[in-house]
Length: 60
Image 1 (tube, rainbow, N blue to C red):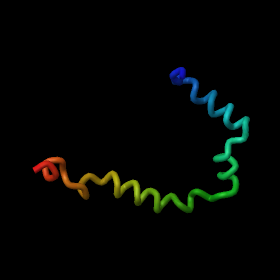
Image 2 (image 1 turned 180 degrees about the vertical axis):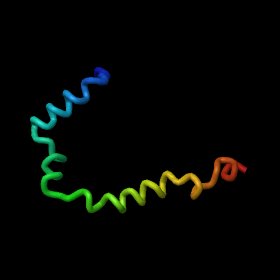
Image 3 (image 1 turned 120 degrees about the vertical axis):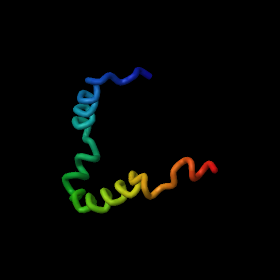
């Protein structure tokens, strides 16, 4: 399989859109903004390194 080029992404997205991208269809019917706060909270919790033990604490 050929590696995707930097500029090929826009072309692929345009082609996908032309074929009837399901995410575009969903976004017309589902208000994804309703989920933003909960998703942000979950992502922040996963990325908060203070809540995880350091490698030194695990390897002892």
